Length: 178
Image: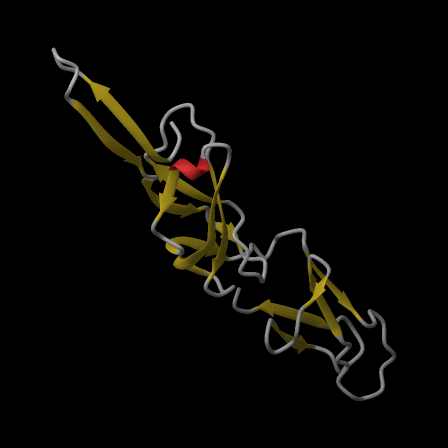
């Protein structure tokens, strides 16, 4: 079960004059590996929520683990997005009995758009009551996603209606992109 070279000597003859010696070298078994990653909901990062290395060829009962770093190529919403798998490492008591030829892998997974009804998205107005002054009233809108401030014009657009005369004005926020 150990790697390396072993010498085997055998002596067999009627007159005890013939002997044979041979060496046997045990080399690490090459594992075939692939990777998979679960889809996730957009969170603005390239982090993979659940990535796995799938080995083929580990002998049953052997103590071998494989770890790796997983990252989407970019953080934007999309289907079948490239996921890069790097820093693939074998570990465990029997890891030296195996080797892998791949140092990096790729797989695909999707980043799903966040639902606008998600409780993580919050909106607030600088002021909800103003005094008529003959001008359009455009109170500042603040939108946060899980505590992170979003940027007007990049992450969302704001439209004001009926905001000049006394009465009830409407502020409409339209989320953009992811």
